[in-house]
Length: 208
Image (cartoon, rainbow, N blue to C red; front, side, top):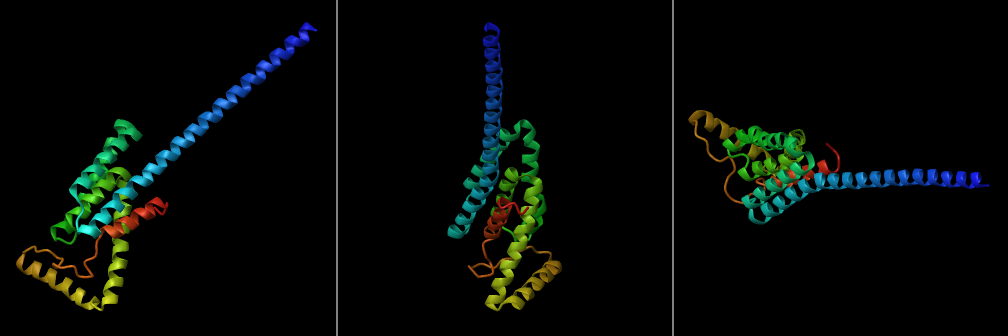
């Protein structure tokens, strides 16, 4: 009788141990999944907030404030350290430097504003060099589609092409660099932060 009771007690203890171990595993998986979900949310949410706020600023004031760029870079750096530790610094630096290197020529000819390049640099710190390169390419593709639609709608497509040809002809003849964009809020001089934000939306949606 006593042996049967001892056997039952041992069996119950084994069941409890297995149940406890299974519960611990379940809690660990849930915690890991929650942590992974939070990281994914921030990886997607931070670029959206950075690009979206910059687009709103640009639409309202025709510029992206340096304070917002500095804040975005700081937050991106802190997030990268929290996520990857010290090993994340090279990836952060590469993501910031790549846009400046690629887009420096466009800034030289004043075809792209410094605020747009700084925005790409801030995004690159969060997204990394590979993702920000795709962001740049898709931004220009979206920008080209929007520009073409505006030019066709305004009936000034050929006029703008002639202006582009004349601009580079004068540059090669004189060597003088002057701003490509003409002053004034003309329709073709749309805010490039808009296609940048749309490109980040595609990134958040998993398109690239």
